[in-house]
Image (tube, rainbow, N blue to C red; front, side, top):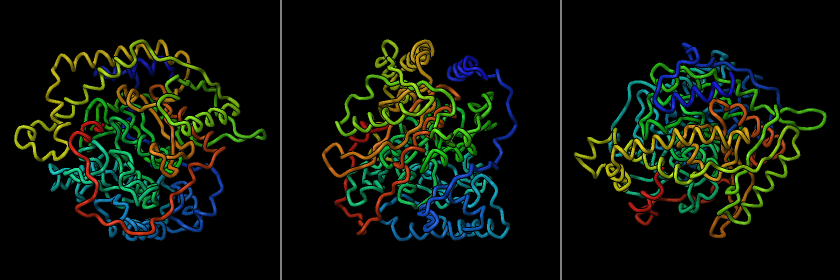
Length: 522
């Protein structure tokens, strides 16, 4: 499909019109996908919990690993360490073991995710398992159906280990409704003040801490990409509508995305290949271009000359990519440019944003507030206390008028047109200093590690990542770039050390107050 038609389809969908330019497929992508040939690392052979999803699948398909052993390795780590990490709020150990035994008994290892242990953010419906969105409002909610995403993951052979902690109603980092911090960053479990990233905090920590092979999260203002960057993961937010949000407790209709937090780009591709595709329960997914072959896109091209990009790609570098970061992070970003400049097919281009970029993104960013309050108006009227420490951020949504919301929508449409005529005439993908503008617009983006740097207060080394944004429905091009980078670096293979001492919650555990929550809300 041509880029011009992609743009017209996306613009129509983004403005609320029914996209009819492309025939709708009646089913999701096939739950079976071949794996590229690659060598499984020795560390993954020695410890199944260390394996990426692709490595685990390779071992399963070759008979060197059973699904039972794979699941048990992760459950053992959950039992041993999750009292410290607090990545999960519900662990479904018995059901996971039963599902693994079925995979082994049937020899059913050829589906895309056969036997792969997964962690599910707690705003995805899971039949018979509490789905709380870490809130008082849904504290007793047990759905009788799975979300479309969970249904597709399990149909592809994925095994659910449990539900992960998250920011209350998908707002800030994972806390209790009273603001008490729960989930910690897997790289600094002894220091709860270090942000694990939100709101998909538990999903990120579970994968980084080797409590799950992969996970899913949601993103409205950076909730997949930010925790991925802060915990050395590859997090992928597809184009708006590429993956279904049916059966996910909403935050905003025009900005909610579902996607994976994975250990590398190939795992992100495997997960997205399963998640993507039309869903009659989510009109945003209908009438879109075909899902590209993401697994191939995430497989690096190796020749006698070394790694090459699958197709020539212009990577835009905006001036603000080096702004407001420490010298160490700036050096890591320059290192990324230097490495990729040597990869055949890569061209770097200095790019500029459209006029009034900050004004337009700021105006439209505010419209997320009434979109959040709309589904929860009943509780806002009846009992504000059920929103806990996030009450202030929810009240903000009541203050925006209808005409301001419409102004924000107009800003979005204008900004998309300006991007098409300006920025994306200069480049195919663009490095991003923040996830928010592309969240606002529903464009795809991927976060991935580029090294380690001291924290902002001069603390110990911590993972550092960056974000690459793309054009509508061009998820494959983003993955091609990251696949090349991960083929020439080993950042994505690095794992945090296991915690030495249990961290017990107490009355003195750090808390976020209402002002901090409002400022950090996605």
